[in-house]
Image (tube, rainbow, N blue to C red; front, side, top):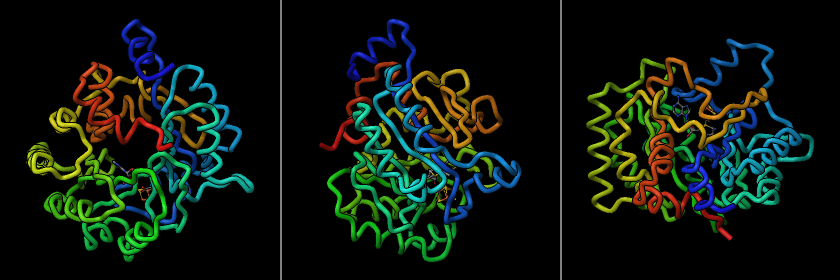
Length: 302
Ligand SMILES: C[S@@+](CC[C@H](N)C(=O)[O-])C[C@H]1O[C@@H](n2cnc3c(N)ncnc32)[C@H](O)[C@@H]1O
Ligand code: SF4
């Protein structure tokens, strides 16, 4: 079944996931300001912190049988995941073998490991050097740029910027860094989904940031959020509209759900994830959004 079949099926009432996002393990070499994983781990001692290879493959198979065709690996730091002598590259191969059209992962780009069998790679970039390092730790920006400079990879690499208090006035500079880097195909902007709440921008700050990003997109900057997605990004409470069926989530402890792990929590009422808006627009059949998102996020690189 292709994408068109999935979409027609969804209109006929077959509410099956198109995307599976798997948080394969919480292990990480960084402690970023906006990331709540470390605090969550400290609050839940003894929680299972990684999926095994067999668990990932079983889940990929089951979701593929239900209709999923796009698989994303998340963490923790994805490139640190291991099960015996298996690593993230083996999970990507398994997803392709099962029949996923597009397989991707997100990385902080600092571990020296890049898996080039992925169709798309997302690297985190939270601002120019001073801001990125304030968010992620001293020297992290230069490590990321070094990784990009040495990259031999024929797929798309895009940057993911999490907008939060502290980087809202550095949007254009960050977009310039992306535009000038030949290894980066574009940038996606998200707002922080709290916790932590103290760096959550106000509604007015979000509206101003979105206006700036829309202006940059109109100027021709490689901004991958769709135009309509950007219009919806300041609207925070998606509880009633989130097209939960489109995206299946699996967490390192084996918890599985449709929708996202924040569903029903206070965080959900401050959702800053662009993907939620894009899923919503795609589920509504918005042709411009489908045309804008497809070339990077839905095709195989081979
Ligand atoms: C959880 S990380 C995992 C991959 C990798 N460790 C990294 O940092 O890119 C995936 C993405 O989620 C983002 N992220 C982390 N905490 C977030 C939050 N509270 N709200 C929105 N995005 C967040 C990160 O900046 C990163 O781009
Ligand atoms: S590198 Fe990724 S997983 Fe690690 S602390 Fe930062 S955002 Fe969280």
